[in-house]
Amino acid sequence: MTRAKTLFWATVIVLVGVSSAGAGQITLTGRIRDFCAPGITGCTQLADFEGSIPGLVQNMTLDTLIGGVPVAGPNIVAGASTAANFAKWYTDSPGYNMSQDFSLTLTEGAPGVYSYSSNSFFPIDGQLYGNQGRTHNYHFTLQLAGFLSFSDASQTFSFTGDDDLWIFVNGKRFMDLGGVHSATTGSFTGQALLDAGLLANTQYSFDMFFAERHTTESNLSITTSLTLTPVPDPGSSLLLLGMGLVALRAWRKRWQ
Image (cartoon, one colour):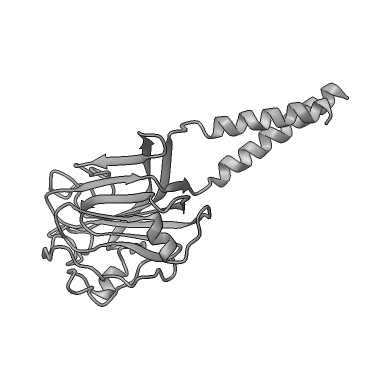
């Protein structure tokens, strides 16, 4: 290998290390949508938000994603929604919701175990529709995406929170905590993924759908030893490539 190439690849390795700064953290990205509270002008309230409190309701969604989002299942009405209303939860619906990009960072504690926890999860206080006369902005949905893999059947993913929470891996539902309810815990393991026909040491799509629909609490806690990987940032990849090419040109000129 020439000296120029050796220096080039050394620099690429350094740049990759810089782009991965914050090792010990995983940042999932997605979209947060704010919904109208009762009695607010300028937007249309869905009865799903600040409506009835049915408790934990499973099968509000089908067990697979359609078009990248969950769709209403057999118990959607029992979960205090309708198919028409639910179709607006995770899509931009002018007049019913406002949205913006959102990211959530999990931090490594014990080696290989990442977590995030808040018993006051109000990430859009004062934003989008605002608090609408309340202490916090209580009415929103959150969609996060990344990739998931596992190497051992004993690895776990656990969630505790309120209200609705669904997690899909490779488009199939593995966690089903629908309904307006107090903080509730669910989990799944690498064994469950194996039983569903997924393969170890293989990346699959990971999609998380959360909803906060009612005053007065909002809890969200995640702990995982399953491997989560963020969706790559195309801009960062292009920047890295560009920096590497600049370095290569400079060293070629120097060492020719």
